[in-house]
Image (cartoon, rainbow, N blue to C red; front, side):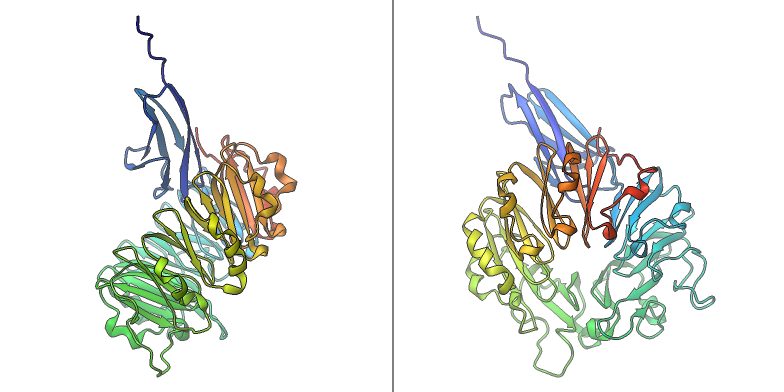
Length: 518
């Protein structure tokens, strides 16, 4: 008599910060085939399948479902409630923000305490903004982005917004500025375009800022990209509007004739690159300045490009056949020259960058890296043979960390920024997610523990909170040096530079839990 088939069992647990990569860990028994995982919003919109997905709907609850034979198990992730500026965290609790970190960069203020009934925050480098239920806006943080009365507008009262912040449909953050897209398609702006050497340009500057001519041209904006001094807005018709510091790309007049049919814009530190429908690339800004030299536009070495990437100074174009080409106009930036690895830059799946280097992840899981030879080459040579079966790469300002399919981690780059993980290598096993700020890394393991390395004062040393780092499911960071870990039950832990959000003791009385999952 045949024995009955044992009943299948399956369990699912999800790891990862909302808005990044979400990874399901499955435990199962008696399955006829390997369990499958599907992802959808709580409203039923399908997001994908597989053990990992990129979270494209962070503002919605997400359901991950594992299936084994006719048995299923699901886990529901709460909608994102964690936001960060460069040096402050903000958490939405019942529609009100609770923030900590640096006050000038968006920590708690009297203004933020008055905000209620909002479902999303818009972080910039220097603060946060929220659309209120009446379609007005309030923002706090730096004096350049903070605005308490949404009905004040330049020039009638001398306030910092170019128009009343009323009838707002959406907000696009800049580095030290904001852009409010109104229901009629017009755009209001406030803040500044940070300059390199000269005084900052305010958005209300009638010449270099959000001038009447810029405002008139800003209808039907699709995206706005910023660098360290200027802004470039891509419109739905494929044209581009620029403003801000002239030397960093705010003046694009010398390429206006070819800035058309644009499908993508990326910004570096002081430059912009635009990809056109025909696969050519247009460059302008500080490194590509209009100096009367033999500059060629579009970029002569790029044809047939399908995607653009940029670090602080140079660009990479990947074509439809997934071959990559590096380029740049500033001779001393070595990441603009990939000739030593050019034959290897095929079948490229994704390109990652530090401020001064690139790493291309290929479809076969191998990695090709180049640039910033002084910081990178010695450590890269030591680990190059280990860069196989890689699933993703994370970067600090000057270092890379590659997460492999087996849950191990390979690092290279500036040791002070996390390029040397040798002190914790033995613990870097069964890693499911890596988070980085500019100076340090935090790896989340499938058992809910956390391993950190890099600059100790910026979160690379988590010894003081190690006992609390248990049952963790997501890790968030502020770029300037703090981490926030959220456990499955909603308890949370912060560490790193207190100035940048590493000390949350000031809000513990009001914020005891940060929802993650059921």
